[in-house]
Figure 1 (cartoon, helix red, strand yellow):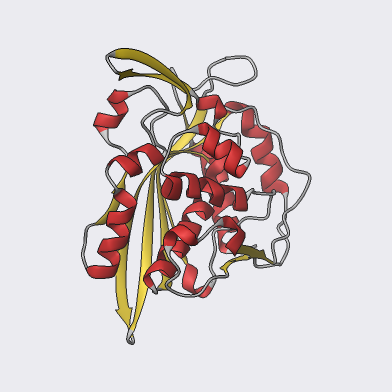
Figure 2 (figure 1 turned 120 degrees about the vertical axis):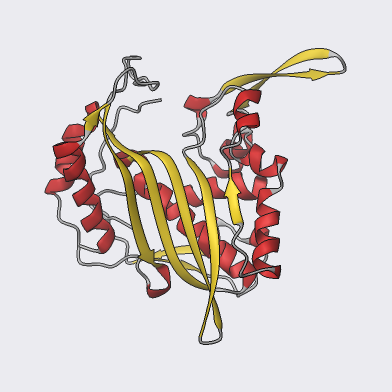
Length: 291
């Protein structure tokens, strides 16, 4: 097993053995609306040396990594919370369960807008021009200590309904080693549905890190992922045990980005990425989603 798979199993074991059961949860199961309780642990941190091909990829079940990169495009390139863009442009429909209606005033009249996740994620990136500010800072002030994107903006959270951002903050740093610049990125998550989305979130943001590094002409450094609440839903315990019973193949999967250095961030897409030596175990598992 690779590093990611070892940590994945260790965290599953820790949650099952020592996780705390939550009370009065917000999520409800999609199948029947029952409260989606979870076992959780806190303050979990993982670090990977991406420059040395140490990727947080598990092969214990298939993960839709390339689709996850398309979601990154929707948030950080398209900079919108419009579900029609995500669905029609990228063919991704997994956000539909979090659709909300928002009210705006146009020419003095109240208008209801559907097909959105509210003033969240891409809409917040656009509102504060966060992506362009990050790229500009990394290029023009690489050793600055404030290369931050923070989507947990309270003004936005109160402006409309919608799921509060889970993966909400990234911090970038640049190091110069032997005359070469290296980009490090830290992702902070308030909450992670570990079995369903844990590794797609990791690889989404590794891909974003790779896109940023290409834009700046920097080499890849370290990716660190911090999760405050790492949980397994009570209806996912059997799937957790199945994953623990699986043995990953010897292949060491890597993600490659096939574009030249200093390619503009907004010109990079999921089609430029290639998964190499990725041999996930099948069949995949089904999960009753907590939404």
